[in-house]
Length: 264
Image 1 (cartoon, rainbow, N blue to C red):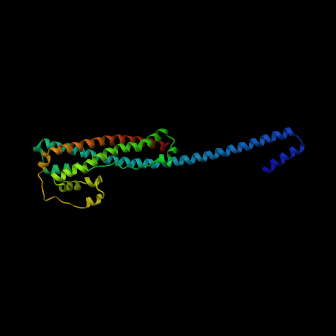
Image 2: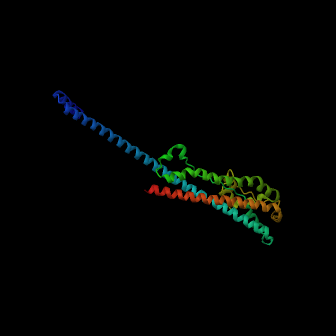
């Protein structure tokens, strides 16, 4: 083909017909430009297709991650509700001594001990530069806010953990037998299920038994500081529960958007 055009150009130059040669030269330039534009268009199409494939892979991965996050968050919400319910029940025992039963007191005490922290899978698309591949601007904004929304909940959860470790549990150790409380918690899978220990399998697989040094549970319930500790347990868990429910709504919104994008 190149040889064919070269022969035409040579004949036109040899004939001395300048106007025909100029027309031919312009036509040849236009053909070259059209060829370049077509090549660029094909290249752009290939790049766009490559980016869309990458976007679909990212969306599918995010969908799986947020499903896992939602499942974990639901477990943590359940734990917080159990702690709140138990604190309220213990307040009832404080106010109405005639309702007190030792096994019930120990049972509900065990459910005020756990703390839970939401530890989601975080895909940091912004720092990796992959966020630009997502074409849905609304989805991009939601994903960019995700880390800060987790931080708000984590702050509340760690406040309760700090209070529990430094004030509540030491108080129970001083005025009651924590061994018996933990025994009931272990049997009901409270401690292992919500991972409040470094190695929950060790907790669940060991039977610590009841303490032979029994304190009167009435002394604990009648202690004026016990109400204060219950109030902290109730307030901190309620606050983090509210944050968890707000975050759960965000996760559901993200999943709905991801599902819609993937189904397109």
